[in-house]
Length: 176
Image 1 (cartoon, rainbow, N blue to C red):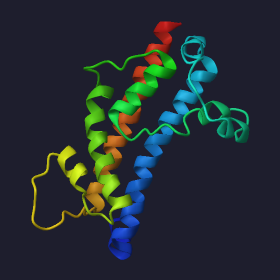
Image 2 (cartoon, helix red, strand yellow):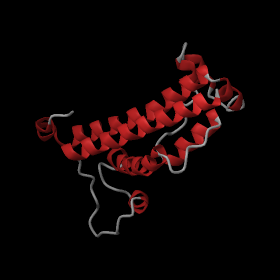
Image 3 (spheres, rainbow, N blue to C red):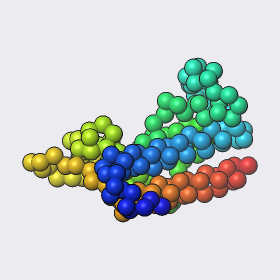
């Protein structure tokens, strides 16, 4: 948990960095879990054998990081990218009505907001506003994050990771 007084003291910039870190950690979970699955699952290994990887990533990484390096150029910043990577590397299709699938649209919203924080000084760009279903405004829309918003973002990302982990574990067990 983050102390609300910390946020009041350090302001929007540190809050934005914490928010970006939450999303980044979620993206890294998918790189790590898919890399781990490739390490242990012969079905995933056979299914992904034709996938292309960057040679520099493979040469730089050592040991268990080599499988993770396969995802260096994969963006896990949208539901579609996550589902596509899971299928391409494991041959598993995310259950359409499972908790994992239901959490992905919420994660997509966070990624749209993150884009504003990272690339537009907290201002929501037109494409992001449209994807978020926001109405056109005269004044620019600014992402304002506080303690409760960070907690909500953390809850969404935690629920997404937990549900993905449960569903992927179940899928692996059933395949074996």
